[in-house]
Amino acid sequence: MLAMIEARIRDLQIQPFKSGAAMKLEAARMTPAGLETVEGNIKDHFLVAVTSSTDALGYHNFLTQRLQVDPNKNLFVSGTPQLALVRPESRNGRLVLNFGGQNEVEDPGEGNDNPRNVIPVQVWAYRGGAIEVPILSEFMSDNLKRAVKVARTSGPWDRMSSQNFMENNNHLRAQDGYPVHPVSWEDAAAIFQAIGADVDPNRFRYQVLLEGLPFRSIHDYSQVEINGITVYQPKPCDRCEVTGIDQEKGEFSRIKPLSGITKAGAGRWIRQDNGHKVHIVGENWLPQGETIIKNGDIVTFMHLRDVPLSFDKPKSR
Image (tube, rainbow, N blue to C red):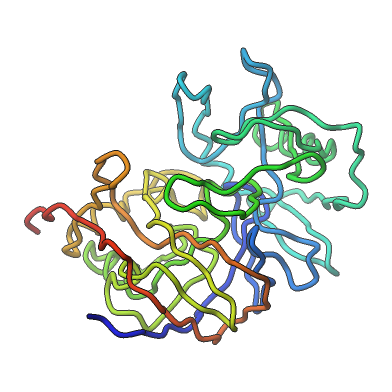
């Protein structure tokens, strides 16, 4: 039986704009709803681009880098890799966005949002109200060359984290399903080295990059501890075609990390909920409290999963 193991935080980043570029942090406030700046004024995934028009059910559907069409779930999401060009930075504690290094706009901040600007939005399965930020809607429409709106996940927003693998009370902004996504540097290095490419863990769009873990050992555990705070790992993170998008250029590239997973000798996870076989990199975290985390902090992996993950046999390299 594996003993407790430790990892060190190598890098921290947040993506304030869903599917946008990352903003590096030396320290972050980790809350049950995700990471944010220590002061709390810039939060991970607290802005999301949505369609300017409403769908048949009356909702503005969210935009992301990948295509999602599922009429049964009311998902009609056009793949928009160019969202990767939305680059954030903090200036005097205020969020400033540019698009591919051109143009700039300052987020007026949650305190200046107009509560009368609530619009109905859909982000994955969630349907509810979010506050539109008109100046950001204009900025994104101009740069994407299509009419969109930008909504902030505040006001009447009451989305919860996914419940299908673990019941929880974690609120969620515009992340895919869980508040925090950690990735192991060693896993990323093995994957990119297997395809002869420079190591680029940002293809996996993490918030926390860990180092010091044996290859794929991050998936053996169900619970970690950081600065006295318990964090559950309900499930691994499924990987999709977004990993093939060059996050600097906002377009698909010749480097396909998914092929590197197989070449590194890792099989696909057989999901116990539906039997689907999926590539995984990194885990999903459900923090059970609030703390400040910083680069160099120790993360202790405490408890093995009650039922180990099952994998298919990887194809021959």
